[in-house]
Image (cartoon, rainbow, N blue to C red; front, side, top):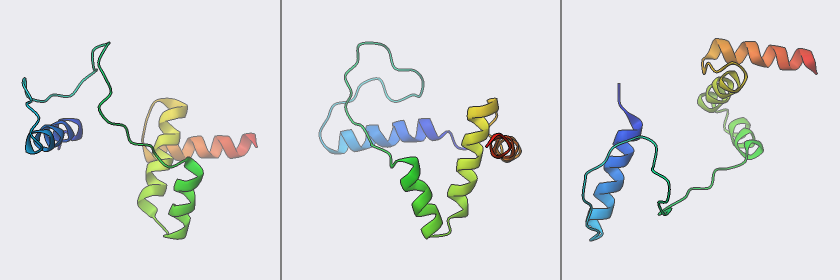
Length: 94
């Protein structure tokens, strides 16, 4: 299994070095200490925009990820089964 956080940190270090930034200490994943400066941010689409794109392009991968996120938010388990159960409960509540 690939550790996405570690791979992302490695990629960030490589990009910084390629641009002449001196990086010491290597890369690792984990919680950042308090008091650090933000060096980059990425704004996400809104959920409505994500759902719109998902429906426009019939994107089942995005649908699956949204279901898992709903499951995680409701039960702490980011699985398809947990998401489907959460969706059924939410629809029942409506």
